[in-house]
Image 1 (cartoon, rainbow, N blue to C red):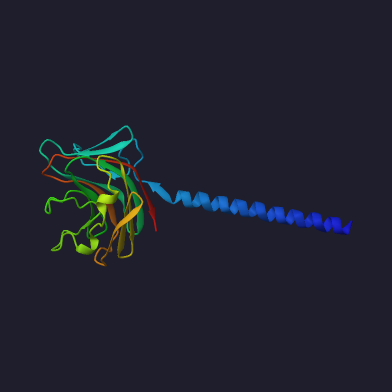
Image 2: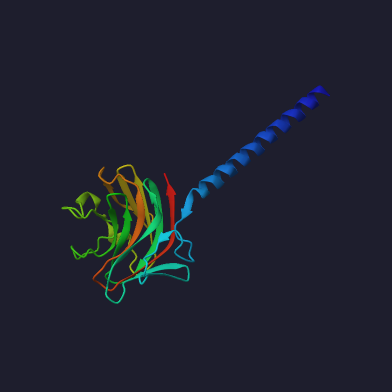
Length: 210
């Protein structure tokens, strides 16, 4: 009887440990999933600082659409919350010669989407500083033509960690830029450039703070 009791107790202990491990793994998985926060809910502009007279941004069938007004004025739609270290993911779609981007950090650093107005060429996934060297060589995207899908949804992944900014396009790393100047937390912005007729669409915008 003693050996049977010992075996039964051991079996119960092992089963208990397995159940505990499964629960722990499940909890960790749920927690990891919960770290991602949707910045756009697919219904309205909740969580964003909407212009007083909003002629630029609207939600159409779960997609955030940005367009110029009749006077071709530009606009940047910023999140209400500020972020410093994070991973940002979003699907973006556009056609033709647009000039848009993601605005991050303070002072402001831009990840370009579309054609640069100053360089007159596609600088998607390159970093724009606004300084003397507007598009630093170190921050320019490489092999963009291999991974960019014109007119289709393109998935951007931007990691801002410390003084280093890394970008993936459709699952491929295309640029990385380091500069300790851009160190402050700031809202994340989506840009409509002034001076040209353009339309850009965003969906599945989500963020994980690091």
